[in-house]
Amino acid sequence: MDPIQLLIICAQAGMLVNLMLIAAAYMVLAERKVAAWIQGRVGPNRVGPWGLFQSFADVFKLYLKEDVVPAAADYKFHALAPIISIAVAITIYAVIPWSGPLVTIDGHSYGLAMAPQMNVAILIILAMTSVGVYGVALAGWSSNNKYSLMGGLRSAAQMISYELSMGLAVIGVVLISGSLNLVEIINSQIANGWNIMYQPVAFLIFFVTSLAETNRAPFDLPEAEPELVGGYHTEYTGMKFGLLYLAEYASMLAAGAIMATLFLGGWDMIPFVDEAALLGLAPDSIPMVVLGHITFVSKALLMVFVFIWIRWSLPRFRYDQLMNLGWKVLLPLALANIAVTGICLLLFG
Image (tube, rainbow, N blue to C red; front, side, top):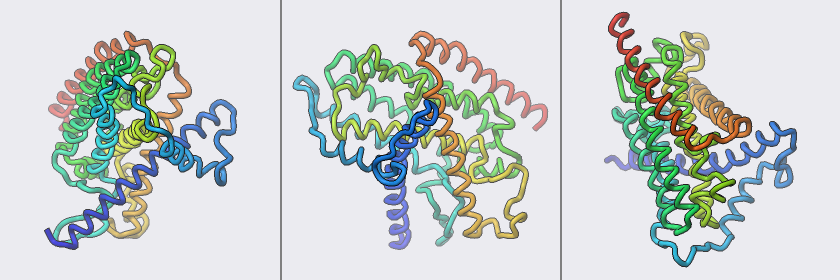
């Protein structure tokens, strides 16, 4: 590999990881601010202007806390579980096309993504979400705490159940776009309109399953405080707890970015409108790439806001309700959506 290409890739990786961690920390602040707004409170406003430095204060507090491990816990897996969770969240970011290509060197395009042109990007995302269950399950089992173990078992059953519906929801998008490449899926939406217009049922299924996959309310049963104290992270302190916490928010932003990619046109600003021609700019010019990046991030953050809104608006499901929804409602609905999509494509092209 050319040294310049290697340097660009390393710079991309460093920028991606740091931006993800900072974004996850500030999403915690955003959650507290939105919760305060919904409940008629002020929220964090003491550390820095408008409380903007509260996230840094929280990270420093966690970093300085003592790392307490139960005497009967399995130390190796107890330490490994948070690493798995945060590593899975970071890996998903590598294939998300945050913008169009910023620069092309020797035929290779580079932008704000590590591997945007990967031909099996969707399979990578589904595979990594499957691996994510190991982090939570190991965190519950290795703590040697019955409440933590129950949280880990709940999470394993919940994530495996909802992954089926999530994968089937994506199939409708793949059928319409004819590709597993996320950039090609976005280009298909730029040419033919956003997939949410053609796959509203798939979008709804993917959104609900994303809530369950990220353990967000009303699907936060693995960490249900009333019956499980803190669930799988009951026995975690310090930065180990911080990594589990950041992994949840990083996964939430990743889910919003994936929905923006698959259903909301990616960096396309307005469906059926050629923004470059409207603004008199070349499609691959720097201003258009920057505008596309801002558009993409705005869509992802809008989905994150809806995630937070739902958490502070809906009560938690019972576990039997959660399983019934996954197996008896979402799974048949996803299968029906694939059948209808296939028939429509066969009849109308």
